Image 1 (cartoon, rainbow, N blue to C red):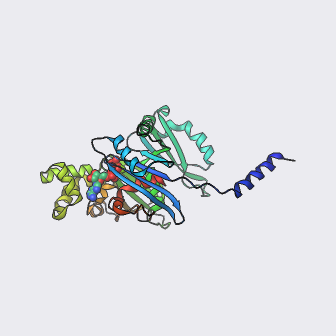
Image 2 (cartoon, rainbow, N blue to C red; image 1 turned 135 degrees about the vertical axis):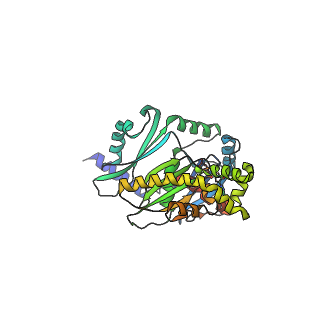
Image 3 (spheres, rainbow, N blue to C red; image 1 turned 90 degrees about the horizontal axis):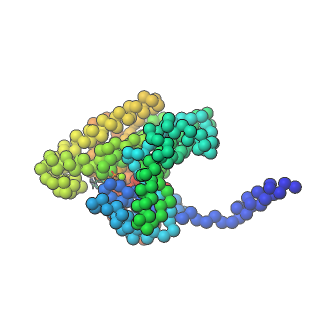
Length: 348
Ligand SMILES: Nc1ncnc2c1ncn2[C@@H]1O[C@H](COP(=O)(O)OP(=O)(O)OP(=O)(O)O)[C@@H](O)[C@H]1O
Ligand SMILES: [Mg+2]
């Protein structure tokens, strides 16, 4: 008698009849340079729903106080907390490798870390993911991610000092990739690729997707604050006034757009370089650009991108496909919808 087999069968049976515990809610916390955005997501019959949300501006770099205020609004309890880091010290690589199971990939890629990342292997945390696990191709698309250890350790420390325990840390662009794959516009397998640009306060994150799966990511260090500075210069006003006008341009819209054209064109030059590189390397056309992030809230910014990039450009609303659980009424989150892409992707 094979007792091991018998025991395995017994376990299988027990696993089938015992109801699975519900997955605990997840809170995605995006610590940006302008504000912290957080959403609590739970599973409901209709799919994922937002249970609570909060946005807290960062004043004078006091991230800890802002995080505590977020904690008071969301009442952290037993939820899983997920946050992210971005910018210098983080890197994502999209590579093709011979197909193998994830466990084998995990064991093997770590021997080639110095080939994939320009960092001392001892100074980073890394992870990997297979992007096309169901494909029958001999080659597989793989995402490799690396983050400087001190960045992750600092983030853990920040949460600890705010009295919170962080369960996972990832990279902003991976969070946006999650959000865009799950909540982005439905795409047909057209053989073409889509680009997404999340315009934050200090930086922007460009990603290219093929069939809803991320294939390229890059941070560009131009954000919406740059636009504020140019508006202030052009109109001879201080940056607080310029920020107000950027949000509510009224009859000054034409002047504001004109002042913003130069930094937007700097972004466009970088996007063009990346898209051309991707198209040449992969021989795949990129046929559309989606904008998200607080910077995309500037009225008419999509028009400037479309005119100067020469591609159709649309604003992506990450909340368009999400349900809200009463009493977490959507309320004024809609006014900030574009800023919640990263937080949603973390929660997902
Ligand atoms: N209604 C609006 N109209 C125009 N710009 C806006 C509006 N609301 C916010 N912004 C701009 O969006 C930026 C903040 O966006 P977001 O919240 O995505 O950035 P962040 O995540 O804090 O920054 P980063 O990603 O660079 O760390 C600010 O520079 C702000 O001026
Ligand atoms: Mg951001």
